[in-house]
Image (cartoon, rainbow, N blue to C red):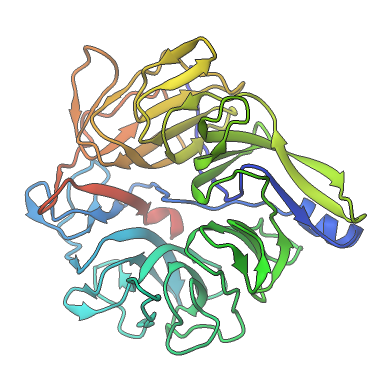
Length: 435
């Protein structure tokens, strides 16, 4: 069956309650859409920016970032070298009338120019000199920017593990930066207590904008809200996401399934009460409840069974028919209590949440990024070979483009290499979608 894809993902915990103080506040949150991308891929014809941990692309030196054209070939008109660390995230934003790529990671320089974990590039590969924020190292560690998210207001949100930026108090682990100057917004100080893995924007509209963050933190601004919280545009924690017992702090990816009206979460999420085994994927719906204190709340409760991978899920992307793709480090998927399907690294589920047994790709490494757009899905990670099924001719590539029948395009290929280890693709973004 042919299908089109959607490309929205959100961040929320496996079981969560957003508490609010009354009907008006409840309406604000109820009608807000929690969506964003964790290690996203966004596609178009003008070229795919690929970031991660690698040294060469198709045999030519390309440190941690490369641009591919519409056929998957390396675009040599984008001469960028990112050094001193990896690139975890890339997004596109506007500075005036110009579109720029903003990258985040653990790097220390771009094209020989000092940059600590975050930088902006023009689309010809020039470093934007005016955008030079300086995050301080966190206590006992290095700067690691996990997510850069444009707000549409001339700023970007920065999230990850870092100390205060440019000496501005309250900007550790999450900050809002002016795109023209790189300066942090002094009145936006959420202060998560530890690393933030993802930031998800609310649905644009008449309601006040807010974001949900997920990560390894125990509190935000001194308010206990382990692993997830809702932050308004003033930087205040406006709704706590309270976790049930046993949930873990490793939320890698979460996707909003618009057609099914559910949320799909991936990562190391918690422990099954029945047998004590960990679980890595869950699907939830929104349930309205009156909380014990008399306020209204947002409850995310299990809607239906999902396939159970046996290790972490790093990426989820929905189809517009309600199904989805999921990728990660797993080697098998449990379909029910009596059957395991030895499907490694990538699988598809249909609109009923059932495993699609006709999609049996063979990969030689984990999947870290999936993006769906129109008739294509793009997949990246730590693999170098992909087969459409047993006996099929392998497609030797570090990034795979799937068509609407979930077959890999044999002409879209790129080979990546890394000095001293295996190459990894962490994120991807394209240009024309934003112009």
